[in-house]
Image (cartoon, rainbow, N blue to C red; front, side, top):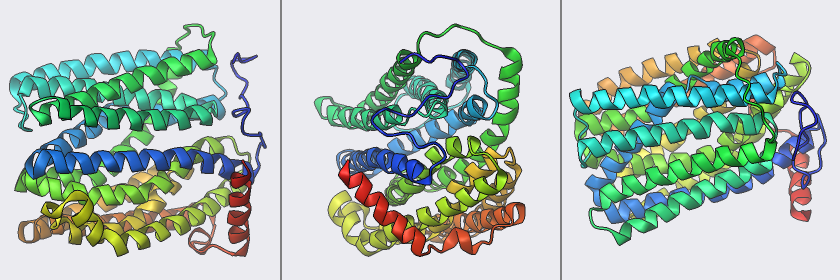
Length: 455
């Protein structure tokens, strides 16, 4: 496809009729994307089950710690450039050539900086995760750079409203991860191959996404703009900080458990987190689609009303998911992951309850980003991190990873409550409109299901 103008916002995939500004269009596109995210979540869950059974408790703990570190590292160095790409393509109407070129330069700079960090780390800091240190630092570099490429160019995909490409990419990513996991049975030294093959899969996916995007929007001129890049980073850093604090507030508990109680406790906690991940795919999917929608919506009142409606509909779906998982968690852990992971049950149930607060953080943070008011998200995340951290210090020494689960749950509930409070203060929209669905919402869900089924 060739765009007529670098500032022209393209229609969505021809397979999905475009209805600009139409609520049904947004949620129909979200429903299609959610289908791909559902496949992704199921395949990633299968990867979690297979690694839990094949690696054993200790090696599963090392595996979880490594990829938690990789996720934290990649988010620590991406500087929020992905939402910045989406924002500058839509709200600031910057040419695609400039944004794509700036992204390529940014990724190259990240690769160099991260290589320097990893080389220095290999010399001065031991990385004890059950594999050789040189291998661990090398895998950390490749995995971190790959995730940054994915994050950065996904921001352009969403900014150009190429939702069909994002849906395909999500499924391809999950299939590659599953194939990498299945392949470890062909080799000895399962932990090394489990980490190495998954990192290679991440790299293949990142390169493929970048090339697929380039092919879709070609021809492109290499036209970097340092003033625009500085403006992007100025906007992006605020998103970066809020996301980094939020990620530490989410993944940090796993690293803390592993550091104080060893890989076995980290393995138990990681299995509990897999169930929490299953509840997050709905708000993550909607949130991914929401920022491009909000930055292209004219009028603050309309944007706030749309965010409130999205929040309550998403919460309705997510709370149903949590209720089902609470009922089946004991059976799911024992019979799917294995009886060795039975200690995870209580922690998983506590964390599932706490995840209800995190849903509002995931959705409403996109509203504040669309209005360049990320400070409210930062306030919520920092308060949540402080309270969760203090509770962890108080509870973990006596309760172990169950204490970390309680701290996690309280932190998530606090962050959600604060986001609702700030949203009400900034927009004037009653909190009830973010919590309680009405008859029109139920009618909307019925119409959406019928329209998607007809497709």
